[in-house]
Length: 370
Ligand code: NAD
Ligand code: DAU
Image (tube, rainbow, N blue to C red; front, top):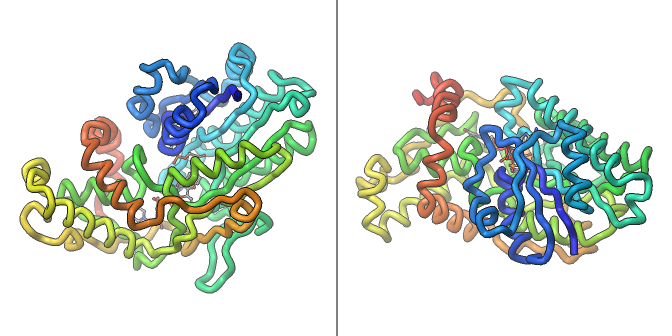
């Protein structure tokens, strides 16, 4: 039985992880620590809180003594760190916030765990797992081999640089202080509860509301799409290994250009409207409500500065050593995701109100006439 502190558990992947973990490990203790930034949403884990399956604490990973006290009070033996600023475009506007949370926050969290667990953390079976990204490895050319665990770091955005710095700190705390740490670097996740600033939910909601779909540059940038449920299963496999197992790459083994994936989402929405007449009344601005193709909303807009062209993750290590396999391929995964946003309008309406609408207008005005 584990006692987990899940930081960033009200965000996209953290919330999915909490749902997964509480259903597959019902005897474990799960405590979520989340600052509830714009990206955190209590509604994503409310059923777990209300049913007593987890304890929620609002707080910042940078508050070292408070976090150490929480680890001690709850006798936490496993920290899973999802907490981060996660959007590349925002890191181009405001790098300092990314350094504060992703670098200094991670360092404070490492210190909190080290202080609370003491020198024999490893012997007592304690574990600090840090969730990182494939973006630390930089960008790949068209024929280049996928990132392995030994690919040199070459982060290109302030976000990626802050995640790379955090990874180095985790490694250094393990090496210098013997803190039992592991790291996973995964590719682009998609699925339920993803904040609508990210490409796929942004496109789903824009289609439903009849807004343009902003494709940066030529749309031929390649991402390695991973359904979030597969990421959660990968984390479960990794957490069952000793901390000394080190670094694990987790990819979706599905390299697709942005334009292809957005086209698939358009077609899925069109098919959903054709199959269910009530959707036209709920979303009258959606092209499909008037029998038009959602693809007509696609607009090529100014590219993201320094935009990484291609990511691809080599998952050989986790596949061969831990038996990891993709359970949700892209086509059914996207279908489930579109269905989830259609079925959870209350969730996304509550997260896209106010500040987000203003940020969206600033971000995309002049690009697509947001
Ligand atoms: P997200 O932005 O949806 O959620 C981040 C969560 O962290 C939010 O709930 C937010 O409130 C919380 N948070 C932010 N700053 C905090 C702080 N200082 N203290 C406590 N909580 C704080 O992010 P996500 O997409 O769920 O990503 C989770 C982790 O996975 C991040 O570390 C990210 O770098 C990494 N990752 C994400 C992806 C992806 O495709 N989304 C891929 C690879 C790695
Ligand atoms: O690779 C893992 C990373 O994936 C994570 O570490 C990040 O936290 C996560 O945000 C994601 O980063 P990306 O930059 O790849 O995701 P995003 O959804 O922002 O963009 C996906 C691709 O789509 C990217 O090539 C940029 C493009 N894009 C994005 C937006 C928001 C567009 O063309 N238009 C858009 O409006």
